[in-house]
Length: 315
Image (cartoon, rainbow, N blue to C red; front, side):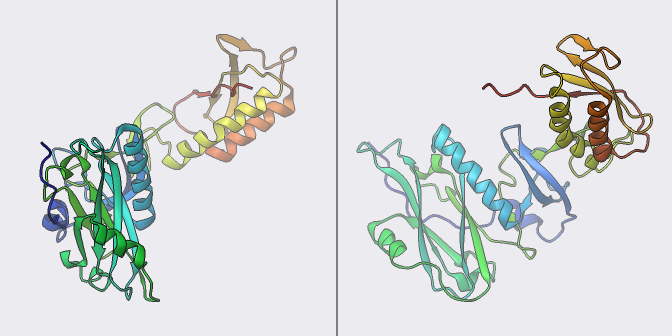
């Protein structure tokens, strides 16, 4: 027998928004969940943790990206195992609007009905930061009719709320199955804090050490900007070398002065960079120039370093 349909669902800020909002020492960084979700730019307080995990705050454009990734994951793996995030936008002087959020098939509805919730937004209350800004209920026929009848209008300042739906609890009538998240004073949205397993994204130095994203330097002296620039430069260097040696897989370069290629390999075989080899001086000079544009011409401690090239796409 299917459980009774859920009643009105609670709209509330997550725990960390309630308890930690008064004392925050925020940094700008990036977060992800394992290697599958993110990375996303955010602000967070490194001390605000749940079981070691982070509580990030996202600007609106990034909240849209978070939303898109959750919906893609739900479509791929099923709504019964993935929370989804939805951004609803309007204006400060918009009339109240109703928005129906659709989920996947219900696990309990024997007739195969789809899960859905309705969110009524009072746009005039969004600026006040109270739960009265949004009310979440079942997606009744009346709610669907209201959603079709009126769209956010007005000419006031743009406003947005974020809705997080935990579809796996919706059939149980849980009052925590849906949360509405309002922006803080900086217009940032706390998504998944004290609930999701957010961790710092890392950047990888030439020396092989991983650094948390907000740390701009590695102990070896390489900067995050240099490491990122080199990552973008790698395919350019590979394309230059492959004009004369199509099977090139990697190159070794020195950084004791202006960066320069010293070894180029095809699989396990080292290619001759001098007379009789596949490369001319102009090609090697062009590749070295790309490295200088990425890293600069000043010496960098450590090295030499390998630059590996992705395989050519099949044709």
